[in-house]
Length: 320
Image (cartoon, rainbow, N blue to C red; front, side):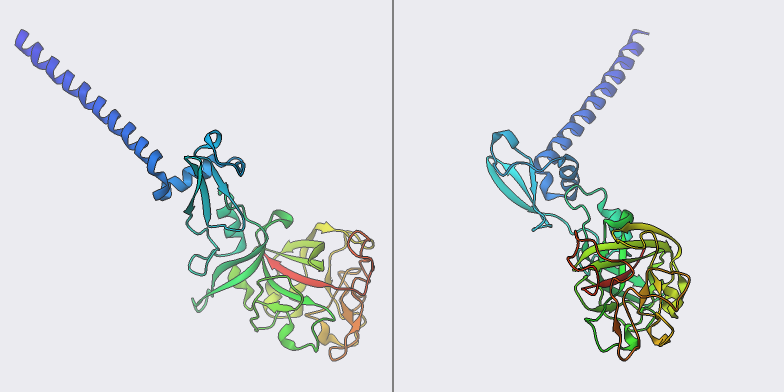
């Protein structure tokens, strides 16, 4: 009986030693990762969690092992080591390069939401969209509005009225012409087959010299790839409206007075959203010789422009 107890005791001791060894290995591995974490993607994640605040420019014993990030070098992080800033490369975030695109600005915004170093900001990002019928993919750079109405909006059309003449049918938001929409500089752009973004919402926004004046969102209008009525916001809701007049009234397609229906698909008003043949907030008269009426439904406040109307205007359509 004593021999049996002795054997049982030996087995228990072996099991106890085994668990102690496992614990020691776990602690050793964790310590190794902490000391060499910058060579692995795991360390990048740890750094992101620790980067609650940006450290001071001074690197000394008070901020040892703290990270520093600069938006001007988005793929680099500096770590304070032995009183010296040491740079380390970060892996690209979704949307940074054509080889690492998102499916939309909304997808990119969601991927950046957990990244302390790379919060999503307004600007150009790479996206890859797929035609559901042909299964053909297209990678492109688009401007993303990451701040208005929750962010995640992909720019698919813009037009700077009276600055882009003569007008052509390629400029319609329902045309099948592709012209890169990667910024909000004065000009025009269009992404054809907008349905490829699998959007549920769309937004119409107006800018004066890149300053947002008004923005309204609504349900995605599937006619936007086919005819001028696709520019009508369904169940519109205001996001921002700094106009002096007609505050709370969404923009809508209009040819002003019915003189030239060819303006439908480019021109908008902001007074009578259910009457597409009256009023004007962009331009009017004729397709071949458009007349001035920028901001005449809105009237710009003095905080945005010294001129209430007849001044720079860019209208943009986003999908989400």
